[in-house]
Image 1 (tube, rainbow, N blue to C red):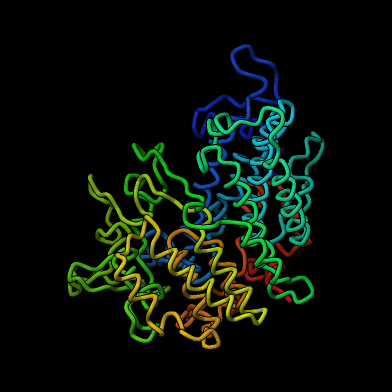
Image 2 (image 1 turned 180 degrees about the vertical axis):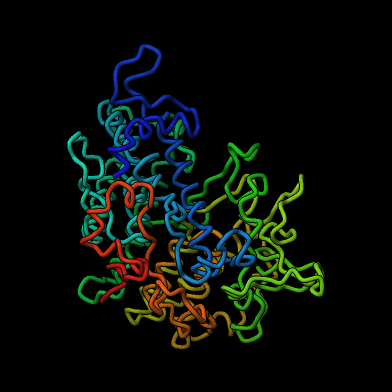
Length: 518
């Protein structure tokens, strides 16, 4: 695995990413570089790289879940590969979260926790445990089986790193979060909001909000087991949500400096990464009234871009957009910044929604958790609780600072019986899941994909969601269920560990992950 084979690179991760410190931690002593780096200097780079990892991989997962689609089959090269639920062969595309959890986060997170424990900084220890749990949760949800127990094995003679079951990873996430909450509750030692705030780019040292984040992640972890009747506990999910975020003020947000390509959001126009993607026809149908009984969503102009003729359009997976002279530019789908699709943004482009140089970029929101509570209550049969949480979820997203829908438009939308049923018994599962999808559009790709796979991409649950009409031959007629492990580490260095999982088979990406199965 890459951890062993590229150890020298692993230990210089921070110097490459943010130049916060030189991370030559387990090599020879060097008078010009520290042997030990304090937790405050490690935390911010780890957080930054986790966020960028989500954004990197969102280019591809975003196509699977139909937030956006590719311009054509040639821009970028093999652009329809991901639209059609396939993968890029012999490529690290879709392996950035893998890279960050094991490389940029991995050993540095362990060093952070070791420094925190040695210096009785229990707040840093708690945040480190929550961060590590978050990394494992993201990684296993998109890849399935991953390397857990042997991930950071330092045995120099070890050449194969064995994979662990997803069930084991889920249990480890729970353990880490519970330990993290305990440490975040401590006030002894050298616990200090000001000290934690030095390294914390997400909550500026607010331990209470980190505890709420931990409970939110516990809710996500427990809720993903909804297909497993023997394991799923809706009351526990609801209790976790109730212990998590209380309002939008608790949302976990990451804001970039946004001054250059070195410190800007991966989604921003400065970095020029998204010009070949256009909004999907699916999200347009959810917002333009097609799905919700003709009710136009006031969020449509906030989230989406109208074409030059002021008409909203979306791309169909695997179809793209014609650039023939007979198709006027004014009637073509725009890119996500509001400019011409497949054309690099001109200088001065500011972007919109989350597609700006500074962000913000959400990591978990109150609205998201309320929809999880609504679904759990719905499954339980408590439609009164489900309806109340469903309404709170919609209202929270409508009133979020990055949406800015007027009070009048919010009221009109929430009071429309086609959106929020006046009677709890009329609430439907597809309403909950579609409104959750809208509230996560543009950032919540991992949770959207978990939802779609839990319901096997059902158009009855995700109304009007349409899978590709034809899959690549390697899919054997099946939709995608997981990302393959990162090519440069696992398929180059660790193939023998993949063989027992079926990881060398061409259709491994269509094998269902554990949490989606009964």
